[in-house]
Length: 204
Image (cartoon, rainbow, N blue to C red):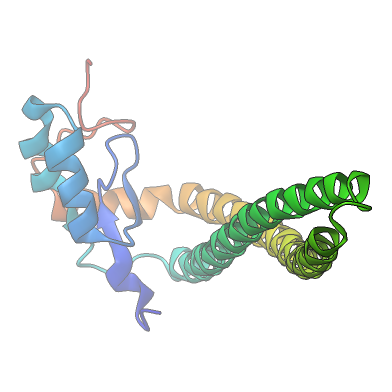
């Protein structure tokens, strides 16, 4: 995590927000160049600048909490996705072995009907059935474990997401409470900025 959270604050990361933490400057620039309207790109990139002066300490502290919550949510989200993928892979394996199990069951049933004429065939099919059943049970347990891991990861993600939402609300509240000081700093550092209090594209 960035030791000096002040370096993470940027002006006009989004056109409706004056100042906020920018987690990925290069990624944001790429997003603007590829996803935003062509006539807006120059303005957006020119105004996307790091805050050079000192923001109010209360904003910095709230930003640190917000940044930690964002990172925690991102890490848990990644773990949740990995658990979901493992769960999906286990489910697919479970289904594949289930198909083998069903085929083995039908083969044993057929062999049983012709048992008197094909006792050896029945024995071979029965062994295959038992092996398939063991494999099916094993993969079934793996699926259950993966499913439990996914549920735990989902709960962790929900908890982290709640913490993120709370931190964001606190951050926005503190930001709004300190807006007069921030506006003074903005006027000093962005003297020609078209920001009207809500957007860098007034009248649109």
